[in-house]
Amino acid sequence: MLDNRIKISFIGMEPTEALKSYVKEKISKYENLLEDATSIEVFLKESKSNRGVNEDFRIDINVSLPETRIRVEQRGENMYANIDEASDVLNRRLTRYNEMKDHWSGKSPWKVDMNMENDEEADTNVIYIPKISKRKTMDDMTPLEEAEAIERMEMAGYDQYLFKNKSTNKISMIYRRIDGGYGLVEPKD
Image 1: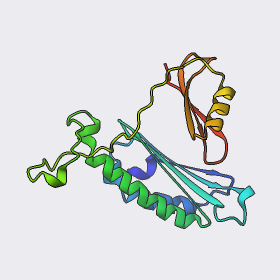
Image 2 (image 1 turned 30 degrees about the horizontal axis):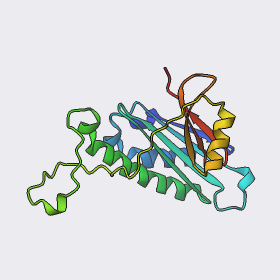
Image 3 (image 1 turned 120 degrees about the horizontal axis):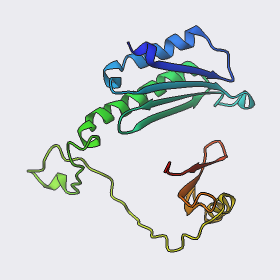
Image 4 (image 1 turned 180 degrees about the vertical axis):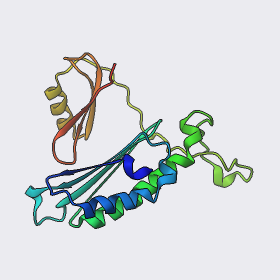
C-alpha cells in the first residue's frame, strides 16, 4: 500500500492529521505511476519570516526512482492549494517518466529528429531532445576555493559556475539557490 511508503515531515508548522491525510489522498491517486518509486518524501513548510507575504507555505515532494529523481516544489499562501498544484505537477512528471521508462533503462535509444513535421514517414516513437544552442569549453580549470568560485559566478552574472574545487580536487558546480543562498554539487567518488 502506497500510504505507508509516503514519509511526511512538517517544518516550522504544527503537524496535523488533516494535512497528512490530504497529502496521502492526493499522492495515492498516482499509485500506478509510483510502483517503481524507492522513496517518497513530502516536506510541508511554513516560513515564519515570510508571514503576510504570498509565499508563507511551501511543499516539497521528492520521489526517488531507479533511473532518476523527481522533485516538485510549490509555494503560496494556502497549503491546500499548494498541495493540489504540486500534485498536478507530480502527475505530469511521473507520466513523462513512465512514458520514457524504456529510454531511461536503456532498452530504447534516445533519438533526435529535427524535421518530424516535414517527414511523412517519421517514426512516431522518435523522441525530440532539445537542441544544445551553445557549447563552451573550459580552457582554464585552475583549482579554486569555493568562495572564489562564488565570486567568479557573481561577477559573470551566472546562476551556476563549473570549477575544479581546490579542497577536494573534484570538478564541482556552485549555484545560486532560490532562497538566496548557494549550493554545491560534486561527484561522490
